[in-house]
Figure 1 (cartoon, rainbow, N blue to C red):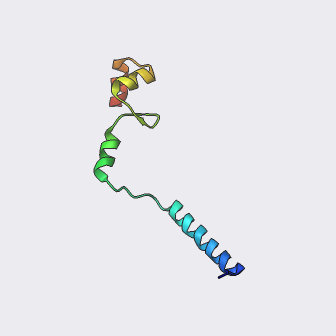
Figure 2 (tube, rainbow, N blue to C red):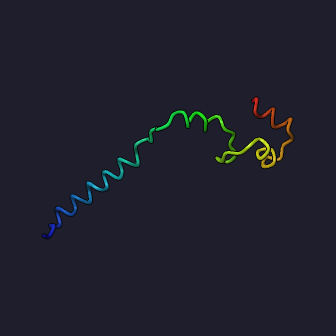
Figure 3 (cartoon, rainbow, N blue to C red):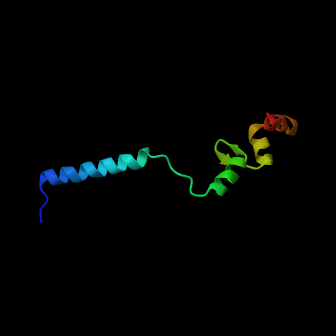
Length: 71
């Protein structure tokens, strides 16, 4: 069975449209509890870190760091 050129173009067009639709939709949060926990965690450059690691990375004293956390 051979596919005509017009059918092939239609199939490719449907594929592109479906791919675009998937890319443009905003992703839904599946696990709201996990999102809440992640939002509370401390991050530096998008990575989760402990307070000690954050102080070392940012080069701050503990007092400066506490002030920044409160602000």
